[in-house]
Image 1: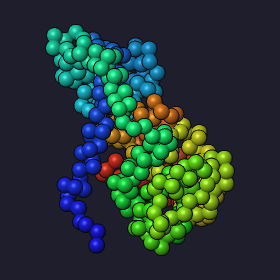
Image 2: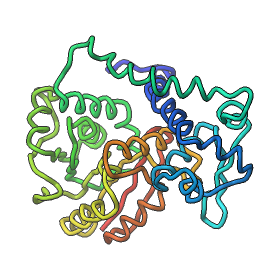
Image 3: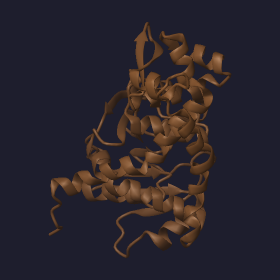
Image 4: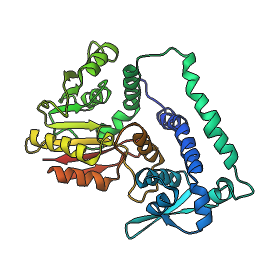
Length: 325
């Protein structure tokens, strides 16, 4: 029998995530200080739209809006939704400690940390054994689903589906959890050849309950399945690319089949969760996508033809959306 974890042991990974994401929070504050966000907010003394702030600071509205949302998520700025539009305002914290004009401003220290100290920490791993980039990325994805997979695959009852394909399933960690929770399911991980080879070499056991199949889900044919899982895939792409993939899955699916999207969902009111807001900024830096609120997933799925859409938050880092053909 597996060892039963205490509640504190079960909760601790989420505490660790606060520490792990600490550098992102620092960079959010550094970036806003460098752009002059706090100075503008103190000067105006009124709520401003992201469009207005972007125009004044000569930034892109897309990137700035995500930055402002993250500042709201860590209680440095405030936001109010009026007629569907977000208006941001300063707080006592931002006016007193972050605007340059305040006598108690920490702005000089913040800028020095950002420009001089922060870059130096990038070289800290040089003292540690370096590994191949793909393997490091796969290890990161494996760690993510080790603690998040169970909440994800149990958020919505997936027992009606007999064959499951995890598109872009990487190491197969999430797929294995599907096998454990739904042992009647046949589960396949579908990923590019180099990922499949690395997964089999470094992350698979002799008694592995899943199968791997090589392919390209954007450009090649998809394996047949009752359910397709897209975990951490949709947030990597702009809407047009997401719809291309969802249309392809819809065309491949039979009536009653579905797609399960696993992502870190934003709140509709822009007030968090901070994990999702930081992840959205991370996607701005790494790829072309973003994190989305439930309404945007609903729009993507209905546009692709899916119906009977269920949105389920797990209360943890990742949430799920199920669409049925």
